[in-house]
Image (cartoon, rainbow, N blue to C red):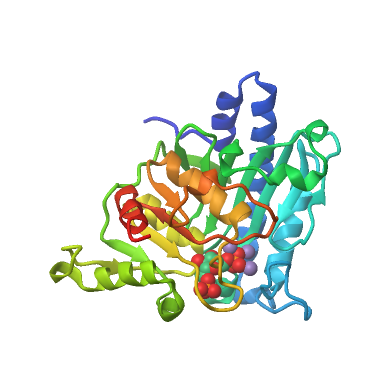
Length: 329
Ligand code: AHG
Ligand code: MN
Ligand code: MN
Ligand code: MN
């Protein structure tokens, strides 16, 4: 019987004696450890009072109400990252970059808790991260470290806290799935070089927003709903968890597309998802698994941000279906 490879072993093998890889490995290890702390809280559910309680009166920089667990998750990640080679942390829950290790060579961007609206419903939530190189000597100000196209990422991934706590990670050579083994306490490699099927009949959207969407996306959905008799010539199925990490993991497992377009509501002119700590890492993971990610017209990884909390219309998943959606624009 072969022994499953642990995250520790995987990272040690991948990094070898390369110091920049060792820095990334230490950073991902710290995020995975923070994730176990978050998973622990999530698993206590209603025993852990007030995790879904709205905190204070002010929304976060992006305009979302902050729940207790959003803030606690960020704090757990910050603490674990302090002794690592991460110089700064960009986070959904903090307006500005958070300084970490002054000698650090990396910048980390996180969505500490994805799926905030699902915290108290016993549905999967997660943590998303993106890692880029950081070199103070080339930057006018620290923020510029994250104002680079998504193709500058050296690693990205997400944890999902569901029936299993999983880590989906890429280091730029394929996408790997690790599962937390409660018996040994380790993350074990469960699927290597994941491939998202190119074709799909499954989409995920928040259908209550369709009347606000832009015209190309309304046409796409109408054609899906027309089924076999319509222009797409096939019947579709809809699945939507409302935690992007959970919707993404389903897509990594059996294909599909996740769609959150721009819409006419105030504050939604660039959709809902944030470019730096949601769209970039998902796009990197998806492309490394032979899928695709676009805002409708531009490949996500080619976009250069101008603001930490900038939003972006987001479509990702099965390559042929993502291309079909782009053809409506
Ligand atoms: P977050 O909880 O980090 O703010 O992100 C929520 C995102 C994503 O997880 C989800 O797919 C989407 O927002 C759902 O948005 P709405 O329910 O507001 O449509
Ligand atoms: Mn939020
Ligand atoms: Mn999120
Ligand atoms: Mn969040």
